Image (cartoon, rainbow, N blue to C red; front, top):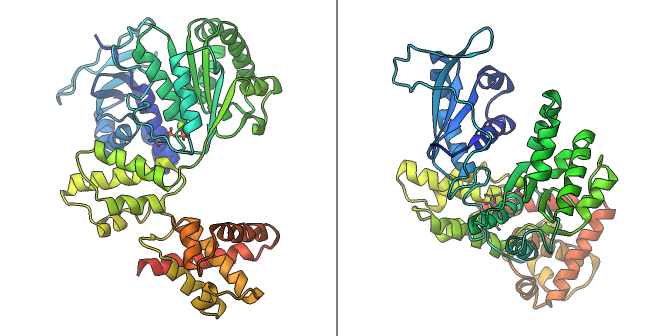
Length: 466
Ligand code: ADP
Ligand code: MG
């Protein structure tokens, strides 16, 4: 008997294929609207296609990219298998009999609602989204501790909990860690993870099919832990918001745990019913900030340790210097190098890494930008000398370039304010902080400063390549 359901990974991988513009909309419509998810096994996903021709085309064009996506999303090597299923006029599924190329013959089965819960894998949760794999730094320690607290005592102290933060900041990972932790404690809680988007479409479907009662019942009475991802997607969906409001109340009254993620604090949600917003604001709101350099390094080193291929430290450091905000992009860069090393059978050198990752970094690569380099470029630009920047003079002609240099160094390197101060004639770190603040303030009131700074940063980075 089979208890695996990887349909969410399938759906998400084709969605990303489209969203990431890896294929054109036209191609997508041509090939993907006729493919349907059928079922999963431990190591594969089976989808149906209408003909052999279809199967060959899709395999040839997209198999590799889809299997890679599935791996990225699920953390498992899932093989994609194709069944050929023709639909007859009256829409009954007919199985093609002349299946002479070795594909297995598919027997349509009505999936029973009462699926047995697999022993180890929760059907909606990624097995690798766990607390063990979640690196804790200053940026997320509060959220991580709250999440652990919830998994120890669901439905009691932090209910509801809303985790907010930008894209790729770890919201989904942290939320699913809660689910996985509770799941593995095995006390029989019914855990439901659902994206807001799916919640909306299931709700609309239930209206169409006149199965609202079943929908209500499912979420209000049959859940102990409800995890809804990306609730900002509910904006302007009044009907669904209304439904969620009542679901919320029912679960809250029954002391069932709810966790939500959102791309912003609830107060900033637009086109949201106030009564729902205020529900999200109840309980605990925690945010995930971008990780600092040390945390980024810890995340990638962790990942590198887990991988069978070892990427050298200097390469890992270079990635962490260049990808600063989004952890998803950070990890994707390392994944790419690991895949490259695996496929080509070469050790990754700095040069290979820079070449392979050129596109992942939307700015030129900065392998080793020094304070000295920034001082030279900025002083050249203002027609003064690096010694002027380090010296004592406090005329405007010197202080402005000095502040800009400090600001740029803060932006593009990981030197501490103390280290920067030392390179500017032994100034105190508070002076450095103050200078950076000055530039930030001036950018807000003087629109010529930002382009100037950006240009200088560009030159610094370009020189960094030579
Ligand atoms: P979000 O939901 O905020 O967009 P995700 O939870 O999807 O972000 O995280 C993006 C990627 O970054 C995932 O691969 C996730 O495992 C990883 N990630 C995020 N935060 C951490 C962390 N603190 N430690 C390890 N991996 C992390
Ligand atoms: Mg997410």
